[in-house]
Image (cartoon, rainbow, N blue to C red; front, top):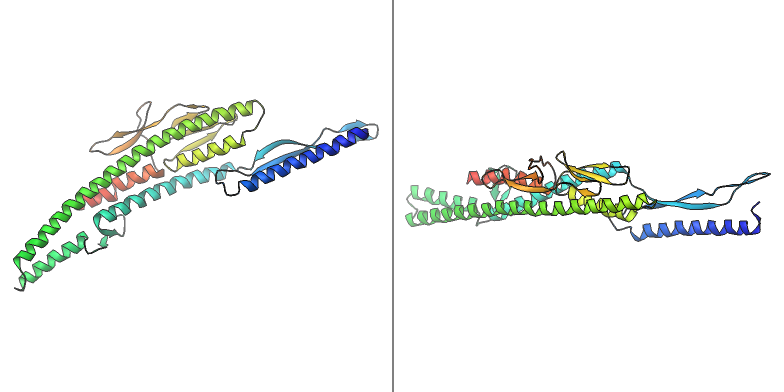
Length: 301
């Protein structure tokens, strides 16, 4: 039998277990607006029973662990959508810059689809030039007006061409900045993997470290499409384009840009200089606009 002191100890441990569970609930409420936080749960387990002549006698309950309520499938879906969102956001930003420099509103990804957005836009100046030609055919026009309109169109074409070249340069610079940020994320993910491995090997939990790592992984996915593989020791391996980048607690590779010709920056890994197929994230979005809509606009000019 438990006896008096055993019964008092049972009650004390039960209260301590519920107090721990309340603390975890408070932690969840405190982080309700923290997007990097995963809800935690106190796992309460029945204590080892005491064998008596009348049978097993309960000895109360203890908190055996504090676990995170994470769903790996949902986490992977979030990573995938982050890559899509990052790509679309980069494309939108680049096209808005092109619109501003062109002085027109782009109605589609095609360079030929544009409508006048302002009286100072290229379409408006071309319209003015054609009107001056039309006036000349009726005898009401002034040759000086035609010359002036032609000069305005010429100046505008030169200015727009220079501006679109600047947009192209800005996209390359943005890619280089994203690559540097990706390499920093990879190093930090590897460092967090190392800390998580040590914590779990010692029999503890590392919920806060797991949250921090997931935030870094999601940030990385917004810039480039990645594949993740969870390991039994608590680490998460990262690969990009089929090339391993993070293995356990080590960043085994990184990204770098290379010139594929004519200032067309693309992505490769640092170790073997293998070109990587980048299909998502802001890096892919910038490449899509640079080599698609923006190249079409420059060719049309």
